[in-house]
Length: 84
Image (cartoon, rainbow, N blue to C red; front, side, top):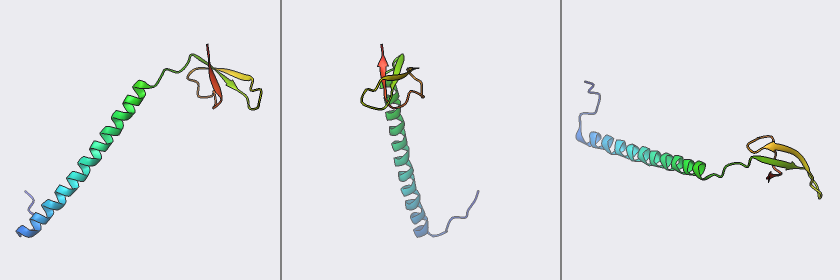
């Protein structure tokens, strides 16, 4: 067994306090990460399903449909509406 710890009680108690502070800090971080992961999972579960088809619109006042994409297509762009 390793015996590289200091021999006196005062330094041993100091090391114990320091170690306890680090464990509390790590436990708080673990709790925060678990909470964030649970929130992300709830968000994924509650997210509505993408529409089956979307129409991408052009820029301007008339804004005619320019393209039709599958609902989950990443190429649809920012200006789109669901198509029935």
